[in-house]
Image (cartoon, rainbow, N blue to C red):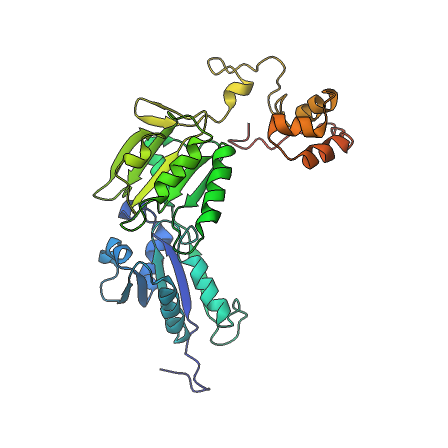
Length: 337
């Protein structure tokens, strides 16, 4: 029923972008569960709706196919304009290759602005969930303990040269990499091209793990190596984790060292010679600047050695060293050793 003034709904509509996590009820957050409970309408890819089938009984449910992301966002907006609360669900996290992006694109195209307290304002809430990157890592050990990135191999919306450039940069920079959307019925070559780019920078025996349908009934985990990964069973429900140059597999667990051994003796916890607990490594920024300034080499020569732009090195060498502030200490939150 509309209000007596104009045609504005009695209550403002709301779009809740719900991340379902890996898909098992055990890993659905309390807020995600509550959002689905309070929603009038549930919209999502048919597989995602199936993951929460027991929670959507009695509600309006709109199922869409894999390639209808914009249609889902438009449906959500239309129902929110009618004053409904809409749960637009994504597996994993809605902001990681999920529905948050296309929904905001649709909203902004329609002239939407964040609520200002006016009648009929549509509220948007993003409800986070664990992405495939996190959930797959949790199943296989600790592969993401050091720097990592995610790259999608889907070229349905992104030109292949852009994807290839990102793959090459990540491989050269020694990131641990999670490959999303690695292969489908039609897209079978992309994973081989990714392998080719990584083999130009990584050892053939670099650890790789392939996780399919994490925390779902058909979960499958396969440990392999970079030179063998393209021949493994990989599909759209798979996430491929490629280790860096220090990643190892032991006793069925994939682990990427954080770097503690660079500073401490792992067996005793004692600080190594030349290092100080709570301070940058001797090869950290300050130490590195001292080294290159004392090297007697040109920025061009140093650029070849370190694989960095010569103009960056020249600018770093030209700046005066920063005096340390007495009593200054680094942030030593857990993980910032």
